[in-house]
Length: 62
Image (cartoon, rainbow, N blue to C red; front, side, top):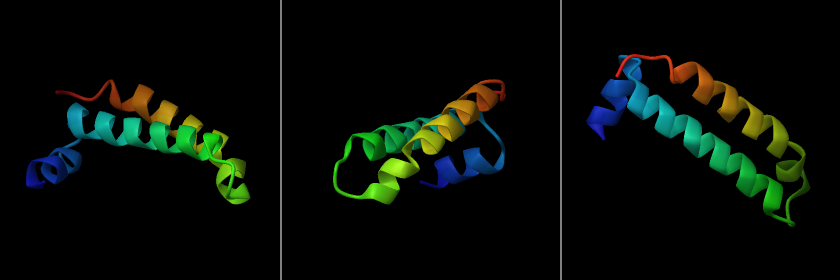
């Protein structure tokens, strides 16, 4: 856990890509669930933010 936080603080690719992937997965889950309308409403923007974040952090050093 401390390596993950240290990687985030030092802008390393691995932890930031993991976080971006989690945000994308969260957006897809929000899109597919039929129960909470606000989650469905914000699912596209969540997925979009995760995708843009993944593109940006793929340029970080390893």
